[in-house]
Every structure is written in C-alpha cells, then in structure tokens.
Length: 122
Image (tube, rainbow, N blue to C red; front, top):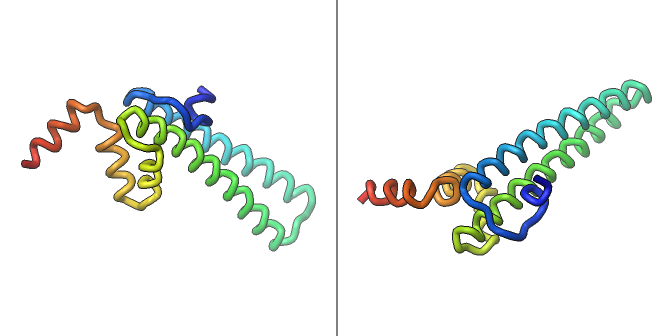
C-alpha cells in the first residue's frame, strides 16, 4: 500500500485508482484524528495561550492538508500514466468542480463506460 500512496511512478488501473483514493482518505482521517488528539493533550498540559492554540491548529491542519494533497496526487499521477497522459494532468484535480468531474469521468471510469457516456451525448 505505501507504494500506491507515496510514489509518483508507475501505472494503476481503475480499481487500484479507487482503492488508492479511498485508502488515502482513510489514512488522512486517521492522521487528522491523531494530530488532533496530540495537539489537544499537548495544549491542555502546557496551558498554551489562545494565540499558541491557533498557531498549533493552523500547523496541524497544514500537515494534514499537505498529506491529503500528496497522496491524492500520487494516485492520480499513476492513473494519468496508465491512461497515456502526462502526470501533470493530475493538477487539474486542484481546480474546484472541474477537477472533480475530470477525475471521475476521465480517470475513474473504465474506457467502455466512458465511451458510452461520451457517445450518448452526440
């Protein structure tokens, strides 16, 4: 599983793509919970000021967000490679709504389903 979430090299099929996205989501949630608990305990034990609490929350959130983006892009880059595209196409997923639609239609559906969808619109 680590090579699925932490490597930008290789190719993956549709099934592995969805497995990777779900695994990335689950591990992001687990990381967020762990950081949240550690921050809460640490801030309570140290009696941190409100400003210190805000900064700690900001940095904890930044770590979780960076992890989520890194793993999602790793899975998407490999799927782009499998579909004959450059990994740079995965940056489209960072565009709100457009990126999600592209992700699901172009990368998340098998070619047979995708061709029926595109063909039905004509």
